Length: 448
Image 1: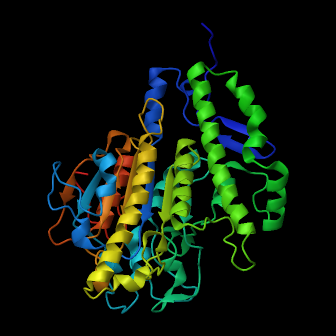
Image 2: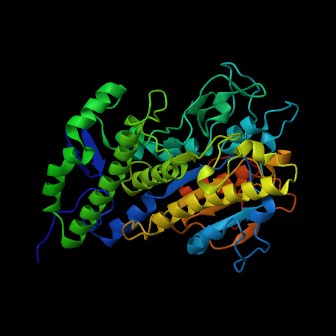
């Protein structure tokens, strides 16, 4: 029988500035002990934010426990029902005005991962608190190429007045490295892709980057010789996995290139810089990039701002022409509520797409990527019509390497005011990066 040398988990394909990490292969886990150690080391954590709350009675399941029925809004998740839990009863008191007046949308975003009250300012003296993802990244980020990956479908804004005297930095950023340092989310898939896989051309301006793309055509082309050499050192199963991985990356790169080709056909001033014209396509492309970053262990921590709170995007692709924020102040008008139900379901459909892909992506002996992940999906508002920050819509997906208990609906507090940060405290504890406190936390959240 032919024998092969074991590979390091941090094995890269290289070529002319490319550094592409490989997914988990059998050759990386030569012994059962090594496999168990790898499982311990590769939990992933992600936070996905949807704006403007939800229609609560269409979101919240009517029963708790394991035999609950999915609500109308959550129905698209039926294929992964055993892989997530619905958590009711959580709130963010620090997103309330607490004497600061208007600005609920800015506070909803700023408080979501920090549990802290944002200083009301539109100047440079912003102040909030470090976010849960960055607490984890400070502990495990040095183990990966990218300590944390911040994604968005909105272009980053770090200054200006966005909501009732609050800086745009609060409203357009989820992740905070310090009380005054937001981690801006990247909306351009091309730049995310290059950050993940390409080193030599990082920082080039658009013109030079375009010249590089035309000349080389594909980042994969740069690493292909190394891939062929690597394949000869692998067993048959790993050769197949490597081929499937390279094919998947190629398809992802083609989708990015297609968006750029479409951009070049648009009139000047209307070019989306590589961002797909379809919002659905944009969201799914960013989800696929997050999945790829987890699969290759390029990062273990990620956040994704689907849209900033207060976003007034229209959803013509699902038959909703009104702006989301405008509709969210529905004043109990039936037609507006119906449109909002469509938007809530649209966002859940995209999340279901992501979870399905994680579920079917192997992660060595640990099972699937979803098995190894802990992923929060939620909003900083529940009822946006009344700007309520309690009884938040929250899902926690994945098994966290066996540390989480998915497949049920729990209601942790009838008042809906248990700090959301208590959930984050439990997640950090199970992630192996415990902290004494996060924002307004009061302790660990049980039963998750």
